[in-house]
Image (tube, rainbow, N blue to C red; front, side):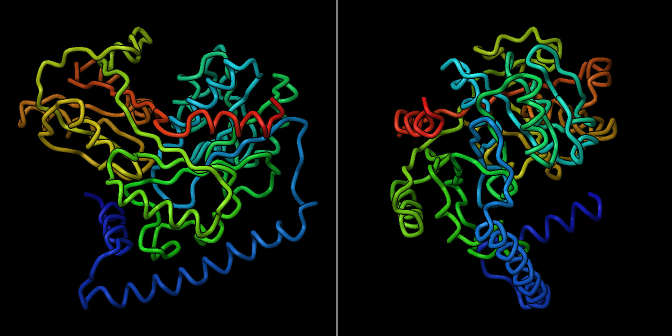
Length: 378
Protein backbone atom coordinates (compact mmCIF):
# COMPACT_ATOMS: atom_id res chain seq x y z
CA UNK A 1 0.00 0.00 0.00
CA UNK A 2 1.48 3.34 -1.05
CA UNK A 3 2.01 6.29 1.30
CA UNK A 4 -0.76 8.27 -0.42
CA UNK A 5 -3.18 5.35 -0.09
CA UNK A 6 -2.38 5.04 3.62
CA UNK A 7 -2.76 8.80 4.06
CA UNK A 8 -6.13 8.79 2.26
CA UNK A 9 -7.32 5.92 4.45
CA UNK A 10 -6.28 7.81 7.60
CA UNK A 11 -8.01 11.01 6.51
CA UNK A 12 -11.14 9.01 5.71
CA UNK A 13 -11.00 7.48 9.19
CA UNK A 14 -10.73 10.96 10.72
CA UNK A 15 -13.71 12.17 8.70
CA UNK A 16 -15.97 9.48 10.12
CA UNK A 17 -18.54 10.26 12.79
CA UNK A 18 -16.89 8.32 15.60
CA UNK A 19 -14.71 8.68 18.68
CA UNK A 20 -11.05 9.27 17.96
CA UNK A 21 -7.97 8.69 20.05
CA UNK A 22 -6.02 11.38 21.86
CA UNK A 23 -3.23 11.00 19.32
CA UNK A 24 -5.66 12.00 16.55
CA UNK A 25 -6.61 15.31 18.17
CA UNK A 26 -3.86 17.52 16.68
CA UNK A 27 -4.69 16.35 13.16
CA UNK A 28 -8.41 16.75 13.84
CA UNK A 29 -7.78 20.32 14.98
CA UNK A 30 -5.89 21.00 11.76
CA UNK A 31 -8.69 19.52 9.65
CA UNK A 32 -11.24 21.58 11.56
CA UNK A 33 -9.29 24.75 10.77
CA UNK A 34 -9.00 23.81 7.11
CA UNK A 35 -12.73 23.06 7.07
CA UNK A 36 -13.45 26.60 8.30
CA UNK A 37 -11.30 28.04 5.52
CA UNK A 38 -13.04 25.78 2.98
CA UNK A 39 -16.49 26.83 4.25
CA UNK A 40 -15.56 30.51 3.90
CA UNK A 41 -14.41 30.00 0.32
CA UNK A 42 -17.47 27.97 -0.71
CA UNK A 43 -19.99 30.34 0.85
CA UNK A 44 -18.23 33.39 -0.59
CA UNK A 45 -18.15 31.88 -4.06
CA UNK A 46 -21.80 30.82 -3.93
CA UNK A 47 -22.87 34.23 -2.60
CA UNK A 48 -21.08 35.94 -5.48
CA UNK A 49 -23.36 34.12 -7.95
CA UNK A 50 -26.49 34.28 -5.77
CA UNK A 51 -26.25 38.06 -5.49
CA UNK A 52 -25.23 38.55 -9.10
CA UNK A 53 -27.16 36.03 -11.23
CA UNK A 54 -26.14 37.98 -14.31
CA UNK A 55 -22.72 36.39 -13.91
CA UNK A 56 -24.18 33.01 -14.80
CA UNK A 57 -24.10 31.82 -18.39
CA UNK A 58 -27.45 31.12 -20.05
CA UNK A 59 -27.82 28.67 -22.94
CA UNK A 60 -30.53 28.13 -25.52
CA UNK A 61 -31.47 24.75 -24.06
CA UNK A 62 -33.05 23.43 -20.90
CA UNK A 63 -30.45 22.62 -18.25
CA UNK A 64 -30.85 19.96 -15.55
CA UNK A 65 -28.15 19.53 -12.92
CA UNK A 66 -27.58 16.21 -11.18
CA UNK A 67 -25.35 16.30 -8.13
CA UNK A 68 -24.93 15.88 -4.41
CA UNK A 69 -23.86 17.80 -1.33
CA UNK A 70 -21.27 15.28 -0.14
CA UNK A 71 -18.03 13.83 -1.47
CA UNK A 72 -18.15 10.17 -2.43
CA UNK A 73 -20.38 7.94 -4.47
CA UNK A 74 -24.12 8.51 -4.34
CA UNK A 75 -24.95 6.84 -7.64
CA UNK A 76 -24.76 9.86 -9.93
CA UNK A 77 -23.42 7.96 -12.95
CA UNK A 78 -26.17 5.29 -13.17
CA UNK A 79 -28.78 7.93 -12.32
CA UNK A 80 -27.50 10.15 -15.13
CA UNK A 81 -27.78 7.20 -17.53
CA UNK A 82 -31.31 6.44 -16.38
CA UNK A 83 -32.52 10.05 -16.75
CA UNK A 84 -30.78 10.59 -20.09
CA UNK A 85 -32.37 7.45 -21.55
CA UNK A 86 -35.78 8.43 -20.23
CA UNK A 87 -35.51 11.92 -21.74
CA UNK A 88 -34.46 10.35 -25.04
CA UNK A 89 -37.55 8.12 -24.97
CA UNK A 90 -39.67 11.21 -24.43
CA UNK A 91 -38.45 12.50 -27.79
CA UNK A 92 -35.94 15.09 -26.59
CA UNK A 93 -32.50 15.62 -28.10
CA UNK A 94 -30.46 15.28 -24.92
CA UNK A 95 -26.73 15.63 -24.33
CA UNK A 96 -24.87 14.64 -21.19
CA UNK A 97 -22.15 16.94 -19.89
CA UNK A 98 -19.44 15.46 -17.67
CA UNK A 99 -16.47 17.25 -16.14
CA UNK A 100 -13.96 14.65 -17.32
CA UNK A 101 -12.26 14.61 -13.93
CA UNK A 102 -8.46 14.18 -14.08
CA UNK A 103 -8.52 13.77 -17.85
CA UNK A 104 -6.69 15.59 -20.63
CA UNK A 105 -9.98 17.19 -21.74
CA UNK A 106 -10.98 18.52 -18.30
CA UNK A 107 -9.70 22.04 -18.95
CA UNK A 108 -11.15 22.30 -22.44
CA UNK A 109 -14.29 21.20 -24.26
CA UNK A 110 -14.34 17.86 -26.08
CA UNK A 111 -16.79 15.33 -27.46
CA UNK A 112 -16.45 11.98 -25.72
CA UNK A 113 -19.15 10.41 -27.86
CA UNK A 114 -21.24 11.72 -30.73
CA UNK A 115 -23.98 9.21 -29.89
CA UNK A 116 -22.63 6.76 -32.47
CA UNK A 117 -18.95 6.30 -31.72
CA UNK A 118 -16.79 6.71 -28.61
CA UNK A 119 -14.14 9.20 -29.67
CA UNK A 120 -11.87 9.46 -26.60
CA UNK A 121 -10.16 7.08 -24.18
CA UNK A 122 -10.49 7.14 -20.39
CA UNK A 123 -7.19 9.02 -20.16
CA UNK A 124 -8.34 11.58 -22.73
CA UNK A 125 -11.87 12.15 -21.47
CA UNK A 126 -12.19 10.51 -18.04
CA UNK A 127 -13.36 7.16 -16.76
CA UNK A 128 -16.89 8.28 -15.84
CA UNK A 129 -17.36 9.96 -19.22
CA UNK A 130 -16.21 6.82 -21.03
CA UNK A 131 -18.64 4.72 -19.04
CA UNK A 132 -21.46 7.13 -19.89
CA UNK A 133 -20.50 7.10 -23.57
CA UNK A 134 -20.54 3.29 -23.69
CA UNK A 135 -23.87 3.16 -21.89
CA UNK A 136 -25.77 5.81 -23.87
CA UNK A 137 -26.13 4.96 -27.56
CA UNK A 138 -27.71 7.81 -29.46
CA UNK A 139 -26.86 10.37 -26.76
CA UNK A 140 -23.82 12.64 -27.13
CA UNK A 141 -21.48 12.85 -24.14
CA UNK A 142 -19.23 15.90 -23.81
CA UNK A 143 -16.44 16.59 -21.33
CA UNK A 144 -14.92 19.72 -19.84
CA UNK A 145 -14.95 21.60 -16.56
CA UNK A 146 -16.75 24.64 -17.99
CA UNK A 147 -20.25 23.32 -18.73
CA UNK A 148 -21.23 26.51 -20.55
CA UNK A 149 -18.60 25.70 -23.18
CA UNK A 150 -19.52 22.03 -23.52
CA UNK A 151 -23.21 22.91 -23.44
CA UNK A 152 -22.81 25.40 -26.27
CA UNK A 153 -20.82 22.81 -28.20
CA UNK A 154 -23.67 20.31 -27.73
CA UNK A 155 -26.18 22.86 -29.00
CA UNK A 156 -24.04 23.80 -32.00
CA UNK A 157 -23.07 20.26 -33.03
CA UNK A 158 -26.08 18.18 -32.02
CA UNK A 159 -28.92 20.74 -31.68
CA UNK A 160 -29.46 19.50 -28.14
CA UNK A 161 -32.69 20.58 -26.46
CA UNK A 162 -31.89 19.30 -22.94
CA UNK A 163 -28.48 19.39 -21.28
CA UNK A 164 -28.00 16.98 -18.38
CA UNK A 165 -25.12 18.08 -16.15
CA UNK A 166 -23.45 15.23 -14.29
CA UNK A 167 -22.12 16.17 -10.83
CA UNK A 168 -22.85 19.89 -11.08
CA UNK A 169 -24.74 20.99 -7.97
CA UNK A 170 -21.73 23.16 -7.09
CA UNK A 171 -21.21 24.39 -10.68
CA UNK A 172 -22.83 27.81 -10.31
CA UNK A 173 -21.29 29.32 -13.45
CA UNK A 174 -24.13 27.94 -15.59
CA UNK A 175 -27.78 28.73 -14.92
CA UNK A 176 -30.01 25.69 -14.73
CA UNK A 177 -33.73 25.01 -14.82
CA UNK A 178 -33.70 22.22 -12.25
CA UNK A 179 -31.29 20.92 -9.60
CA UNK A 180 -31.72 17.25 -8.70
CA UNK A 181 -29.76 16.31 -5.58
CA UNK A 182 -28.87 12.75 -4.65
CA UNK A 183 -28.64 11.78 -0.98
CA UNK A 184 -26.79 8.59 -0.02
CA UNK A 185 -28.96 6.85 2.56
CA UNK A 186 -25.96 4.98 3.99
CA UNK A 187 -24.09 8.20 4.80
CA UNK A 188 -26.31 11.19 4.01
CA UNK A 189 -24.40 14.03 5.66
CA UNK A 190 -21.35 12.43 7.28
CA UNK A 191 -20.41 13.99 10.61
CA UNK A 192 -21.98 17.32 9.64
CA UNK A 193 -18.65 18.99 8.89
CA UNK A 194 -17.36 20.32 5.59
CA UNK A 195 -14.29 19.04 3.80
CA UNK A 196 -11.73 18.02 4.90
CA UNK A 197 -13.03 17.47 8.46
CA UNK A 198 -16.18 15.91 7.05
CA UNK A 199 -17.62 14.92 3.68
CA UNK A 200 -19.90 17.90 3.02
CA UNK A 201 -19.07 19.92 -0.11
CA UNK A 202 -21.11 22.87 1.14
CA UNK A 203 -23.30 23.66 4.17
CA UNK A 204 -26.41 21.52 4.61
CA UNK A 205 -28.49 24.71 4.51
CA UNK A 206 -27.67 24.95 0.80
CA UNK A 207 -30.07 22.07 0.21
CA UNK A 208 -32.63 24.85 -0.12
CA UNK A 209 -31.52 25.23 -3.78
CA UNK A 210 -32.65 21.75 -4.79
CA UNK A 211 -35.75 21.25 -6.88
CA UNK A 212 -35.91 17.51 -6.27
CA UNK A 213 -34.22 14.96 -3.98
CA UNK A 214 -33.46 11.31 -4.66
CA UNK A 215 -32.47 9.19 -1.67
CA UNK A 216 -30.25 6.45 -3.11
CA UNK A 217 -29.48 3.03 -1.56
CA UNK A 218 -32.76 3.40 0.30
CA UNK A 219 -33.00 -0.36 0.78
CA UNK A 220 -29.81 -0.36 2.87
CA UNK A 221 -31.38 1.64 5.71
CA UNK A 222 -34.31 1.16 8.06
CA UNK A 223 -37.50 3.17 7.82
CA UNK A 224 -36.48 5.12 10.93
CA UNK A 225 -33.14 6.01 9.32
CA UNK A 226 -34.90 7.26 6.21
CA UNK A 227 -37.36 9.32 8.22
CA UNK A 228 -34.41 11.04 9.88
CA UNK A 229 -33.11 11.96 6.42
CA UNK A 230 -36.54 13.25 5.41
CA UNK A 231 -36.56 15.42 8.53
CA UNK A 232 -33.28 17.09 7.55
CA UNK A 233 -34.42 17.64 3.97
CA UNK A 234 -37.72 19.13 5.11
CA UNK A 235 -35.94 21.38 7.61
CA UNK A 236 -33.91 23.05 4.87
CA UNK A 237 -36.25 22.60 1.91
CA UNK A 238 -39.93 21.99 2.54
CA UNK A 239 -41.03 22.26 -1.08
CA UNK A 240 -38.77 19.88 -3.04
CA UNK A 241 -40.32 16.43 -3.57
CA UNK A 242 -38.36 13.33 -2.54
CA UNK A 243 -37.98 10.01 -4.33
CA UNK A 244 -36.31 6.82 -3.13
CA UNK A 245 -34.03 4.68 -5.29
CA UNK A 246 -32.05 1.47 -4.97
CA UNK A 247 -28.93 0.10 -6.67
CA UNK A 248 -29.66 -3.18 -8.41
CA UNK A 249 -27.37 -5.56 -10.27
CA UNK A 250 -28.54 -5.50 -13.88
CA UNK A 251 -26.07 -7.96 -15.44
CA UNK A 252 -22.76 -9.72 -14.83
CA UNK A 253 -20.57 -10.83 -17.74
CA UNK A 254 -16.96 -11.76 -18.37
CA UNK A 255 -14.56 -8.91 -19.04
CA UNK A 256 -13.87 -10.30 -22.53
CA UNK A 257 -17.57 -10.24 -23.46
CA UNK A 258 -17.97 -6.77 -21.98
CA UNK A 259 -14.88 -5.41 -23.74
CA UNK A 260 -15.93 -6.77 -27.12
CA UNK A 261 -19.42 -5.32 -26.60
CA UNK A 262 -20.93 -8.77 -27.00
CA UNK A 263 -22.43 -8.84 -23.54
CA UNK A 264 -26.14 -9.27 -23.01
CA UNK A 265 -26.94 -6.49 -20.57
CA UNK A 266 -30.02 -8.26 -19.33
CA UNK A 267 -28.58 -11.50 -17.93
CA UNK A 268 -25.90 -12.70 -15.56
CA UNK A 269 -23.40 -15.29 -16.74
CA UNK A 270 -22.76 -18.31 -14.56
CA UNK A 271 -19.53 -17.65 -12.68
CA UNK A 272 -17.07 -20.54 -12.26
CA UNK A 273 -17.08 -19.98 -8.48
CA UNK A 274 -19.58 -18.54 -6.06
CA UNK A 275 -16.68 -17.05 -4.08
CA UNK A 276 -15.69 -13.66 -5.47
CA UNK A 277 -13.26 -10.85 -4.74
CA UNK A 278 -14.73 -7.37 -5.16
CA UNK A 279 -12.34 -4.97 -6.92
CA UNK A 280 -13.12 -1.27 -7.01
CA UNK A 281 -11.78 2.28 -6.96
CA UNK A 282 -14.87 4.10 -5.76
CA UNK A 283 -15.91 6.74 -3.29
CA UNK A 284 -18.05 4.17 -1.46
CA UNK A 285 -16.62 0.66 -2.05
CA UNK A 286 -18.67 -0.86 0.77
CA UNK A 287 -21.88 -0.19 -1.17
CA UNK A 288 -20.55 -2.07 -4.20
CA UNK A 289 -19.49 -4.97 -1.99
CA UNK A 290 -22.96 -5.08 -0.47
CA UNK A 291 -24.41 -5.29 -3.99
CA UNK A 292 -22.07 -8.19 -4.80
CA UNK A 293 -23.28 -10.17 -1.80
CA UNK A 294 -26.88 -9.26 -2.68
CA UNK A 295 -26.33 -11.15 -5.95
CA UNK A 296 -25.87 -14.33 -3.93
CA UNK A 297 -22.08 -14.47 -4.20
CA UNK A 298 -19.81 -15.19 -1.23
CA UNK A 299 -17.41 -12.30 -0.70
CA UNK A 300 -14.02 -13.97 -0.24
CA UNK A 301 -12.20 -10.66 -0.06
CA UNK A 302 -11.91 -7.19 -1.53
CA UNK A 303 -9.34 -4.97 -3.17
CA UNK A 304 -10.02 -1.29 -2.64
CA UNK A 305 -8.12 1.38 -4.56
CA UNK A 306 -8.33 5.16 -4.31
CA UNK A 307 -11.25 6.78 -6.12
CA UNK A 308 -10.40 7.38 -9.80
CA UNK A 309 -7.32 5.13 -9.48
CA UNK A 310 -5.64 4.29 -12.79
CA UNK A 311 -4.97 0.55 -12.81
CA UNK A 312 -1.61 -0.91 -13.81
CA UNK A 313 -0.36 -4.34 -14.82
CA UNK A 314 1.10 -4.66 -11.32
CA UNK A 315 -2.36 -4.13 -9.84
CA UNK A 316 -3.69 -6.92 -12.03
CA UNK A 317 -0.87 -9.22 -10.92
CA UNK A 318 -1.97 -8.65 -7.32
CA UNK A 319 -5.56 -9.43 -8.32
CA UNK A 320 -4.56 -12.68 -10.04
CA UNK A 321 -2.50 -13.80 -7.05
CA UNK A 322 -5.32 -13.07 -4.61
CA UNK A 323 -7.87 -14.87 -6.80
CA UNK A 324 -5.62 -17.95 -6.90
CA UNK A 325 -5.06 -17.91 -3.15
CA UNK A 326 -8.77 -17.52 -2.38
CA UNK A 327 -9.88 -19.89 -5.17
CA UNK A 328 -12.22 -17.13 -6.28
CA UNK A 329 -12.99 -14.95 -9.28
CA UNK A 330 -12.72 -11.19 -9.51
CA UNK A 331 -15.76 -8.95 -9.90
CA UNK A 332 -15.53 -5.23 -10.62
CA UNK A 333 -17.74 -2.34 -11.64
CA UNK A 334 -18.17 -1.05 -15.16
CA UNK A 335 -16.69 2.24 -14.00
CA UNK A 336 -13.52 0.37 -13.04
CA UNK A 337 -13.55 -1.83 -16.13
CA UNK A 338 -13.09 1.13 -18.47
CA UNK A 339 -9.76 1.89 -16.75
CA UNK A 340 -8.33 -1.63 -16.62
CA UNK A 341 -5.55 -2.58 -19.10
CA UNK A 342 -7.57 -4.76 -21.43
CA UNK A 343 -4.61 -6.23 -23.34
CA UNK A 344 -3.11 -7.64 -20.14
CA UNK A 345 -6.44 -9.09 -19.00
CA UNK A 346 -7.18 -10.77 -22.31
CA UNK A 347 -3.62 -12.03 -22.79
CA UNK A 348 -3.38 -13.58 -19.32
CA UNK A 349 -6.99 -14.80 -19.21
CA UNK A 350 -7.63 -13.01 -15.93
CA UNK A 351 -10.74 -14.44 -14.17
CA UNK A 352 -12.52 -11.09 -14.16
CA UNK A 353 -16.22 -10.32 -14.42
CA UNK A 354 -17.98 -6.98 -14.78
CA UNK A 355 -21.09 -6.30 -12.71
CA UNK A 356 -23.48 -3.75 -14.16
CA UNK A 357 -25.43 -1.59 -11.71
CA UNK A 358 -28.65 0.25 -12.45
CA UNK A 359 -30.68 2.75 -10.46
CA UNK A 360 -34.33 1.88 -9.89
CA UNK A 361 -36.73 4.51 -8.52
CA UNK A 362 -38.96 2.61 -6.11
CA UNK A 363 -40.86 5.57 -4.71
CA UNK A 364 -41.71 8.88 -6.38
CA UNK A 365 -40.85 7.90 -9.97
CA UNK A 366 -43.89 9.50 -11.54
CA UNK A 367 -43.45 12.66 -9.47
CA UNK A 368 -39.80 12.91 -10.58
CA UNK A 369 -40.78 12.61 -14.22
CA UNK A 370 -43.54 15.20 -13.86
CA UNK A 371 -41.20 17.68 -12.19
CA UNK A 372 -38.64 17.27 -14.96
CA UNK A 373 -41.24 17.76 -17.68
CA UNK A 374 -42.61 20.85 -15.91
CA UNK A 375 -39.16 22.44 -15.83
CA UNK A 376 -38.28 21.69 -19.43
CA UNK A 377 -41.68 22.65 -20.78
CA UNK A 378 -42.86 19.15 -21.63
